[in-house]
Image (cartoon, rainbow, N blue to C red):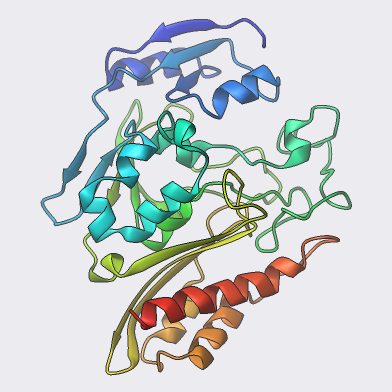
Amino acid sequence: MKPFQYIRASSVADAVRAKVENPHAKFLGGGTNLIDLLKYEVEETDQLIDVTRLPLTQIEPLASGGLRIGALVRNSDLANHPRVVQGYPALSQALLAGASPQLRNMATTAGNLLQRTRCYYFYDTAFPCNKRIPGSGCSAIGGENRIHAVLGQSNACIATHPSDMAVAMAALGAIVQVQGSAQARAIPLSEFHRLPGDTPQIDTTLQPDELIVAVDLPPDRAASHSRYLKVRDRASYAFALVSVAAALLTENGQVTDARMALGGVAHRPWRPLEAERWLRGKPANSGSFRNAADLALHGAGGSKSNAFKIELAKRSIVRVLTELAET
């Protein structure tokens, strides 16, 4: 790890001001991903801005009936909060499926959204990686790519976003609240993460001076009838090969509302909006769910070792929607 300066922000405005003064600085929250990246010299900085003392640790009801989650709420606290367990069960399940209890006790809401890909080649500085060094090439294309993307990939990058929490939040329509030097912004989570295109080194739509201060979950009747499924190589402490977050409402055997997001398949949580729209008004049965799954994976393309993910994702969608329809 290379030397860096450490400063502690006393307020959100102080943190943003420090970032404006040093665009190369990085915000430090739980540090569960950032510290690894610095140790491996995958990333570099000359300054860390510690934001852990800022008053962003509350989970509070919104006047609209939704829920506001402070940027520094620990993953373990969020997963076990009664309002989340009862009103947004897919989010609680996704958090408990991620990492280990020790990491969940440190990791923060904002940090979870901002974690970098777990692509082998991104972490190994001996290999070319466009996400690490733009223009150097993508070693995963033609390399070992079993864990890589089948949707939204580009010739520059086929990495996937590793977050479980972000997948559930995407399905639940979460909105990321950020504060910059000029203004505050509300960014729908579906627009927060980017596809790789020709600039895979840029993960999000955040501006350089913006700090995440909260994530809002809107009030939604379907959210309380939601579920998260994670398919992985081992039962714990493993990233998803495929994951599905879904919310489903039915009436008289027909789908009245459906929300879905997929993880482990793209550079960002993948929201299959066309499949959601198609499902509404259809019979809540396996045939409809399979058709929706086919729509959700339309255009998917596998690489040398990961084509199996396409069928795995379809079957996972059918499983989650069937389980929801039966409860």
